[in-house]
Length: 362
Ligand SMILES: [Fe+2]
Image (cartoon, rainbow, N blue to C red; front, top):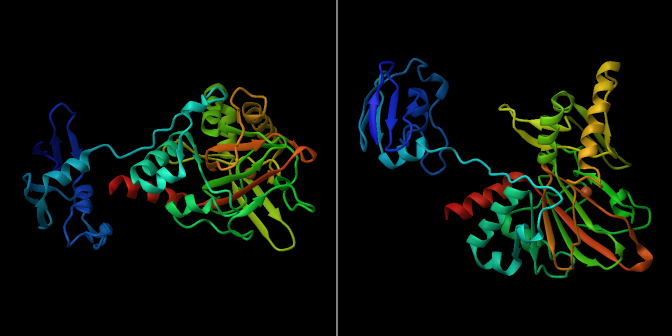
């Protein structure tokens, strides 16, 4: 790497075969691994960044040597740290898929393998990030067997309904999940804030007629909508709707769009839950646009659509799903032909991404 200080006092770093990178003096200053600036264990900032002069200039810089700034602050500039600082920031590599995805491509692992080997766990979590789901086999056929996978990742998300919960037909069901009815593609619990990040669905029994699992890549569906009907995409990303669940013991409500983007415009979350979504009393023309856009999106994700992936979970398998990306559902089943018993729990996103980063940096 070669260093140049530009006329504006910025640090330009040239590395063989790569385009030069110009670093803002304040950006550089905020991040320098200097114990006066940062706690070197946690990376937490110790100084008040907003007090650094915004017209700061670099006045001196040498690799593995001194770096100095126009306000008089001086420190050391480690070459290895600088190389990392100019590298591209890690981004997720999402692989979009549709109903033709080959089961051989499903991110899959045996529980025993990921328990024994952190690299295998890291590969599974990479697959989960890329595809939005992962399948774990060899999970004990015990009521809380799914917690053996959860324990590798971190604490589960406990809600007002508890932690690990049954997904099976019961009398007086408080949710359609607990009936043998088919379930349209949906994301779970959009009425919570934050929405649960991942669903861990553990199969204990599945020998009734029907009861196949369905998955849709919501990010893929959103990309198709964005390409084919930008106005509908703009409506669904620009309209906050209300998601609400209430019964005698809980009143859960959250307002958010069906398709959420980050500041850079990338889609980061899909909320689709027909049972609990209610748009507000908007002006008539906005409602016209909303209902038409919602119908367009539904056509993309509906059970008969080419985007729908359908497969059958076997006892001892656990399906981990990204609840910000995938829409899941199931075909109806007939109780008189057998049993279908699943258990599920939730995990928050930061818990899962933390484990992924730790296993990769170990
Ligand atoms: Fe669900």
